[in-house]
Length: 443
Image 1 (cartoon, rainbow, N blue to C red):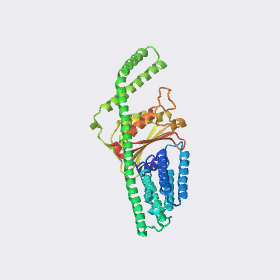
Image 2 (cartoon, rainbow, N blue to C red):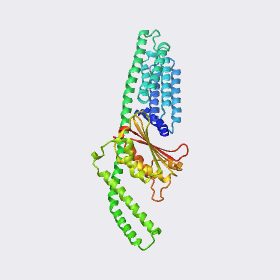
Image 3 (cartoon, helix red, strand yellow):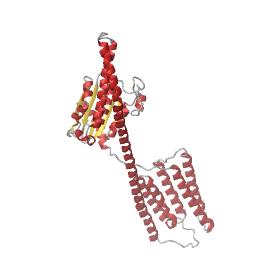
Image 4 (tube, one colour):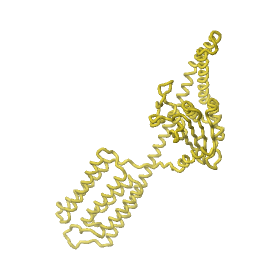
């Protein structure tokens, strides 16, 4: 029993410690980012042209045009680099926004520093970061803008006015710097907060849509099962009558050990098995929900659900159950969906097992884990790469196998808010299926 605990504790502790955060980042459109930067560069160019040539002011305009040209070169390089990309990575966008802050700060240094009315444009990279990037990136840009604002407050070339003695008071410049910094902090945090809430809402909506899709798939499977039970009833009854008549007519004419009589007996047994399965499907579909509301300890519930299957596989299945911590054994209700899923997995394990199948059940304070292992050859790499998808089996097309067993089992378990991990055992001991479910999912 200690082996069971050692196998499950790691997986369950990871499941419990991983907080299911629903926060998602926004998708960053590469072309939109590049277009916005072209728009900013065009605005800088137009402003410099109007001041230098329209108003005729003198200043370091050649250096200013040089900085705009550097920005254009960087944007051209980014356009070429991302010509086959539709989404910009976050580190790349953060680097581009940092360059925008430095380039705009260089322009402010050449054109009056904080006295330049366009100093407010230092807010733009912070707002973009708050809307598209995470909180740490936004804090970094606020600090970078604050540092650059301090520098251009104390070190700058004067505005190109005709009055050489024009200068703003130091207290007013300090007020402009403070206003810019406060605006960066307030607007940046406010935009980030709203964008983060919007991302959480979108993620929650996506998660809800996924749950609804799982429920829809489970409902479709249930409807198909009920339809199959209804439509197959009459043909199976006909086959049963004919096979029994064949057996009765052959019994006195040929030896009891004859292969034909044995085949007819096997046909009768398989027909009865099919009728039993269909009757179970019909019974589960028609059973009143109140009759299934009696909760049992999970180990007893699992054994009760699988009792016919365990009796069929007696001598090959080893059933183990234990607590993985000091928590009490959880209570659970007999859910038909779980029964069908586990029976499918046991049938698959029995088809490939050489001698034995291990069915291990464990529980902790928040989770229930089920592991089914066999000592067979395990999954082939091709099947394992598409595990859980329909029409995926190494036996597909042979002996009536369709490759739907694992797909159906995983769909039923996921509809119960569980997850399934299917791998080959690390020691080469065959296939290994591990199911994790919350304790509340079986109540």
